[in-house]
Length: 141
Image 1 (tube, rainbow, N blue to C red):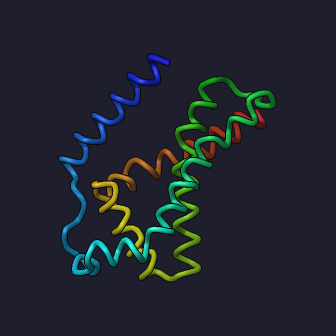
Image 2 (cartoon, rainbow, N blue to C red):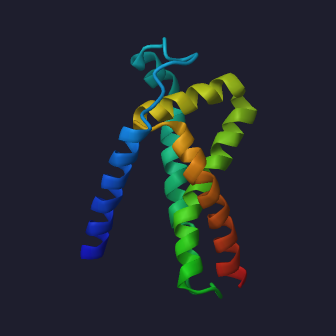
């Protein structure tokens, strides 16, 4: 339990340092929209993003007894699949609601997270790939 608390504190400190280096965009096509309008239009999509992220985190756990891979592959799946799930979710939103609406959601995500979306591109893309590969190796070995 102590290790979980310490990792949460360390993770929060790292995110705060990165947020100072890469704050969310202040300009763009949706910067003129008020926060209330952005909130009203995107709250349900943002909530869906959180649910998908949590689902991606917990997806490997039912396969612990089935898994043929080691603990490293399990850890890679746990840390990478949430980003894979986010990528799939945003892709579905993009296809269903259109590119303008998806860009608005991404802008709102930046505002809510307090972090530039390019950080998620830079870190999330490799973690997404790591999650998929790790999950496949862990389950099917």
